[in-house]
Image (cartoon, rainbow over all chains, first blue to last red; front, side, top):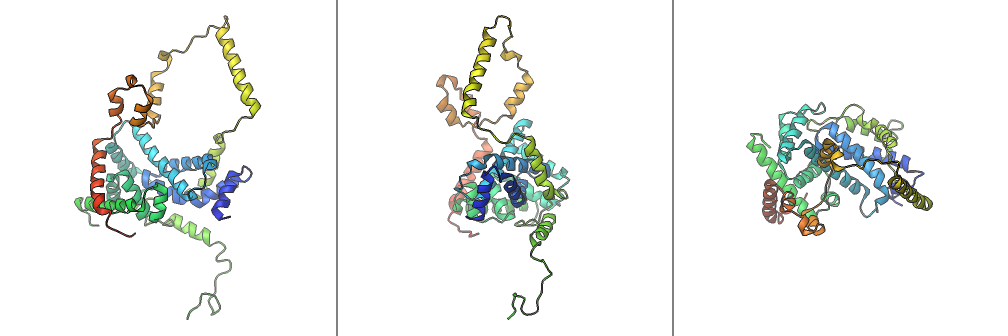
Length: 184
Length: 170
């Protein structure tokens, strides 16, 4: 039995699930945190979404059929939770997608756990200009250095389409930064 | 040729590999997490990851996170008891409890509910599941994507056709 299969089996067993869940959290919390943080940007929001993600994982582990890798399944939950969080927030505040982007930048500037310079901020602005899928692919490929195969399993998109998305995202970011007077 | 086996005079501190994961984890948490490019300004509070598990467990123990399956016997007598109570309430002449009218519901509560609830229904599902007379054109049009989304899609689609033939290979 592989290490992952063993962990899943222990997670599904009521007698061992608490200890196994602790191990799972320790093993994946950082990777999932940074994946979520790149989507929601502020630490407070990332913390909320990360907790919700692990609660969803804990609640739904019985439904995990092991047809995909555990980390792909967890990344998918984290991605859905982060995107739903943003959509729910814009709905509650009654604001459009563009206004949400502006709010995200304003909130990021005010985040005590962000001390990026102007270039870092401009990069985030450029990323927010991208369509959702391109932004996800860019973050996963560039910042998290996931392989196309891994991203493909998480986003359930073909490797060819991912390469195209990443290529377009890079071109658009370059164009945006040049337009803003920043070299890439 | 240099060897890493330790047979040519190279030594390691005692227990070096035993606590290596903890040391590397501490280091990467503070400066640059595993698999991450330089942070670009993003930080976390001190000890955030070290205490995350505990906070999560606290939250999980507060929440009723497991949906328990009812036993077969309970599945019969609970609905039966509920039905009996309901019948008693309806037929009892001494308990003229006022029925809850739609107007009685607090408008703010209703508004908050409508704003925060997710309705994951596509126009196609709406059209399939609602009788035609119940479906106004606005129900479908309201859910049409914004012009910007359409423009993004078209732009991607047109460019993708050309880009797909380029193999950027990682």
